[in-house]
Length: 210
Image (cartoon, rainbow, N blue to C red; front, side):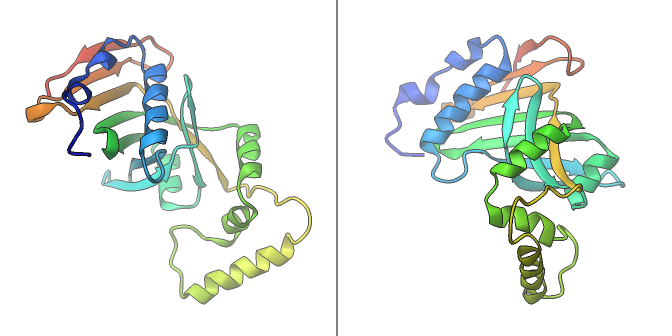
């Protein structure tokens, strides 16, 4: 954060007056798109393995609305297998330039084939080839083996559209809690959490101690 940040910017708490989380998240994401140097949609994604041990990695948010927060992956990857086995997950956005953080968690559903197909078509051609060529999260004997696989699928789909692999699609986290955190001096931060009992329910808002 810039040392010359004004006291108003550090202590502004207007966001705590928000009545629902999705429009507030949209505002914060727009701010991040203007201030973050790289990947404002980057988010830490937490899942659990069969033993209940958490796994954490960075993914890119590819869409959100009142239904939830969407990202895409190979379902045969570690995170894909873990979510299919235990369809619950959590996310944490941290926008350092803004001194803001958003945490959310909830059950997970698979997006529709139509949604996945539509998004897949927007990916660069090389990324679509990569979805076929990479056995994500599994051992790789050498870089050459990956490059060979890429070459094979590039030749296979040299002409025309590249179809979406059946094992590649999207997940939507349907949050039951979303917390917004903003830095304030002396670690007396502003925190509000929106909660609901189920993804279809209405929100209640709670202000939290820092």
